[in-house]
Image 1: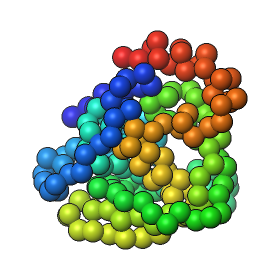
Image 2: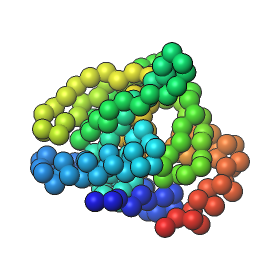
Image 3: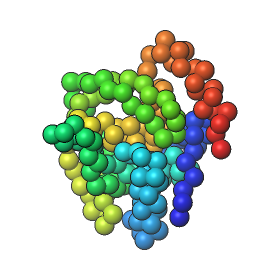
Length: 174
């Protein structure tokens, strides 16, 4: 099913998602829809809240660069009921965009690595340490599950500077 992506200004983006009690066929179908929407929007991540569902599930895919400098996108991963912990002390600033904030790109400081525990599509718990880009995307999507947007992670001066752009995005929301 084609999912509607909710944009900045839609209240669902500011709400906290609820845990998924059981990984059912319905949850797996929704995960497939999230993956399809992420790919359709040329994204590297998408959270359920961006599709209007208050469920703790997101999809991500890694991005690497080959020897020729071309971007290579990895296979999509589904993370259900993610719990992030143990952020590294080392942080990295990187430009981020967001499907719910089309056209906006801002530098966001995040930990370089993070520990994550989540359920896969079989309902099994997985634990791993995510690093670099993969960690960043997971933290970005997990923020969505907590009602946080990238604009909440920038300083007040930059926020003021991008306010006209945010107003335009809000006016165009469908």
